Length: 261
Ligand code: GLP
Image 1 (cartoon, rainbow, N blue to C red):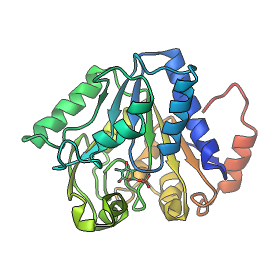
Image 2 (image 1 turned 90 degrees about the horizontal axis):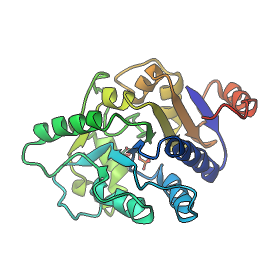
Image 3 (image 1 turned 180 degrees about the horizontal axis):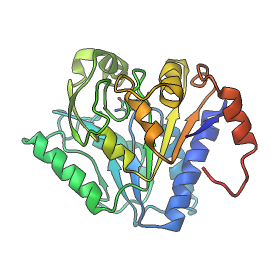
Image 4 (image 1 turned 180 degrees about the vertical axis):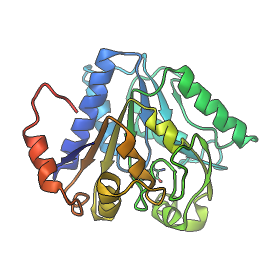
C-alpha cells in the first residue's frame, strides 16, 4: 500500500487525476470506478479541467458507481446517480449510458444487485477505482461488520453514517435513507488499482486503521491491505494518527520518477 501525505488537497486530487488520465491514455475504453461523498470532488474538478483543455477524453470510457441509496425518487438531488451527473458527467464527455450505478429504485433489489455485479464483470472489470472512507472505516457503504468476501448487496447504514451524511439532506438525519445498495468489499478488491482519498482530522482514525490496523470487519477499509495496488492520498490532518508517517513521507520523496502511483 502506498501512502502519500500532502498538505494540499489540490495536489492530492492532481495525483489521483493523473493516475486516471494515464489509465485512459493507455486504454481509452478503460472502466472507471466512481465514488460519491466530498472526498473525490476535487479530483472530478481536475478531470473536468483536463477534459476542457483537451488533454483527456472519456468518450469511449465506461464507469460504475460504488453505491446508491434505496428508495430516493429518481430525480432526488442526493441520489448518487444524480450526484455523479452533477459533479462529473455534466463537465466531461462520457457517452450516453456510459455511467451506471446500482438501481436503488428497483422493485427487486436483490436482482438489481446481481445484475450490477454481472454488468461490472461483463465490462471487463474496473481499471481504476476512486474511494473515500467513512469516519467508521466504511468504504462504499460497507459498514462495520461487512463480510470481507461480500458482493453487491443491500446494507443498512449505521447511525454514525446517517449522522455524517445528514449534511447532504439539510442536516435532517431522518431524511437519510436507512437502506442502501453497495458494491461489496470483494467487488471493490476486484478493481485493478484502488485510489483512496481522505482529508481532515475526522478521518485520522479510519486512515490509521486502514493502513496499519489489523484486518477486521470492524474497520472494513482494512480489507484494502489484501489488494496489491492501493494508493492512499491523505492530508496532514487525516495522516495525524499514522505510526509510520515519516517512512511514508520518505518513500514518496525518494520515489523514482518512472514509477507512477
Ligand atoms: C459515503 C459514501 C462513501 C464515502 C463516504 C465518505 O457514505 N457512500 O463512498 O466514501 O461517505 O464521504 P466523504 O468523502 O464525504 O467524507
